[in-house]
Amino acid sequence: MPVTTISIPGIHCSSCVALIKDVGSQFPAITKTEVNLEAKTVTLEHDGGLNFDQWKREVEALGDPYKVHPLR
Image (cartoon, rainbow, N blue to C red; front, top):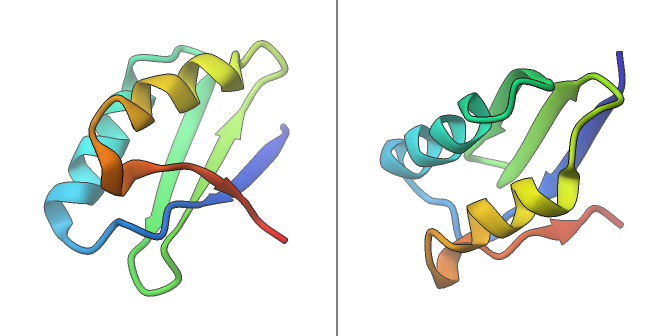
C-alpha cells in the first residue's frame, strides 16, 4: 500500500491533529492518517486511488497554518 508523508509546519496542537484526521476520514482511499506534532508531518497510508491534490486542497482550506509542503 502506498505511503505519502508531507510537512505541515503550522500544526501545533491536538485540535490540529483532529482536524487533519477528520479530512482524511472523508477520503475512502486513505486507510490510515498519522500526524506527528513534534516533526510537524502527516503520513497517509492509501491505495492508488487517492486524489492527493483534492486532499491537499481540503487540508489547506482549514486555514493558513495548514499549508502542505513536500518533504525534502
